[in-house]
Image (cartoon, rainbow, N blue to C red; front, side, top):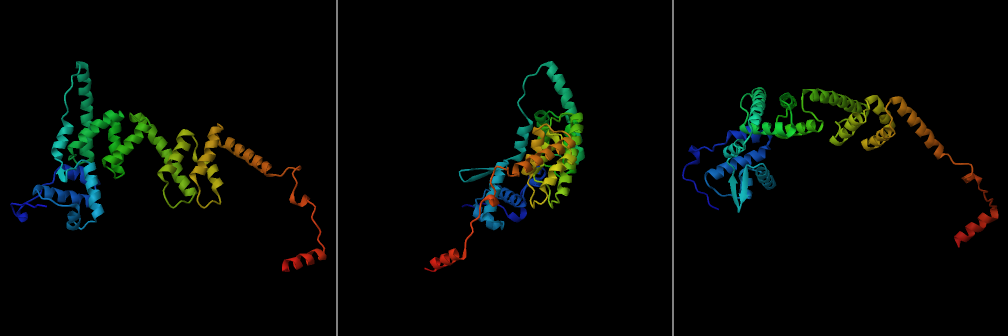
Length: 325
């Protein structure tokens, strides 16, 4: 492999796009950042190298370097073709996102779009100033604009989305999209929908915390366990006092199963039981039926009903003599 360099490395610099620093680096593993920066360096001098050599140079495991190349290619920072690594031009990439072909619109559509875009631009500007200190990456503008169309959020909801992620210290695109998808699935579109969602969200959160406390779990609920709780509260309409009836059935179990709890609570819903009193009566009746089914009927013979044989000493003496032979 060839390494060509016509100037001293000591007096040169390797430029790094600000877009990389603001958009990609915050959510990237430090090892991957090292690999990307070193690739920029190699690309600048038109050098060649192998992943094995890069791993030695950067003091990284060979598998980590391989994973880094896969990741960097998956997010569009580089491409590989015929043993050639091509570093993406991030500036051109962002320009391609911003400038799109124009399409014809009616005067009414133009007026509506202008008003809509005015509100959107004000919201995006507020997001930039509040959560990014006025230095939001250009790609965020196109992403937010796309999220407006995809999720059909009002401006207030979009701002609330960023505020929610900011307060949870997770202001990166993957988390924002996850929250947006959740809100969209709950039919959140405007401020009234969001208020309703937060009321339900707080109700579910309180039930989750109460369950963790009652079961004395030394951990948070898993994502799948949370889905069970959301179903019990949001779909079935049960509060914690009702759910606690099922929790009491886990007494004596070292590892309470949420699948077991769900089977109990789902049976209440299937029997159209809504109140705590209805459920207690249902459980009492079911317990009595179970106890009755376990009782042996009079017509079935029991062990003590059979006539027992009476063996004399001669029988046992003959038994032991035969055993010795």
